[in-house]
Image (cartoon, rainbow, N blue to C red):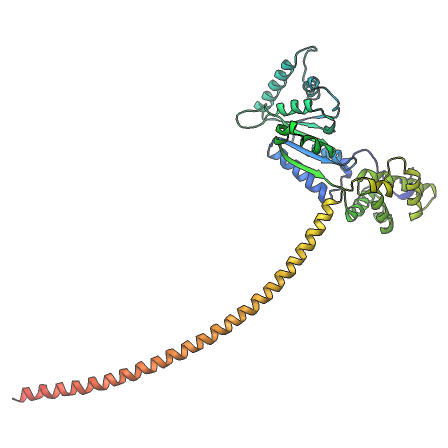
Length: 367
């Protein structure tokens, strides 16, 4: 609809997770690094958490596009299940055949045989469980038990759990202590800051073939304020802005269009200022970084002052050393002169004694 009007080759802001449009902010880049590390090192459980719409699924899809050909992956999205159904669901996702009505123990044997065959063939096996915050304690315990499927040297099944922030709270329960201990790599994905929000919007506009500077800094500031840096909300806002701009045949997007979008979409998932006041804003990481940067600046200033003070002391020490060296040289010169004078006296005394000895020797010869 508006793509041709604004010169896009496709819609830049869609709500469907698209790994081709993944913008690696510092936080998303760190999350991807943690996930890739967990897979490469074949650790136990890998956990990724973050707010709704933060980009977890997009990250996972991007990662799956990069996995090696020797890895088989199963992804479970339906997490409202009973513990008895988990193994069967995993078998289905790996496309492993089994007979209906078999016992839970038998399904576990079938899964174990499959993993052994994978291991013997040199293949890796990964299970990803999305929306894991919905899993019951019983199902989480069943998942923990799957980590016991291993050889003497390594795990047969790597497991990655993905969920909303309350997943972190859930596994801190004392009843899930053993599960929490199995998590080797964990990362919580925070929302983007103002700078990253602007870069994210420009990246998607340019990726779709449009003008990356289509939205002014004033509009970006307002989008960040309204969205709290959540990518899905940013997409919803930006897409609506482009629709409204197209309807008004506005080649330049004005702040009035954004205000109209916020007013119209306030009840459809876009967070208003009032809602932002009542929700936890995930800027803790940015605030921490800002504080650390200030501390680092102060430390650098302090180090600079110390460096100058040390330089002064070194110069003073060098000056004193030079003075002491001059005094030492002068003292040595005096000692050398004294030794030379003493040697000269000794030489004269030696000459006198030698002369007397020679005279005595001649007298003896004459006799």
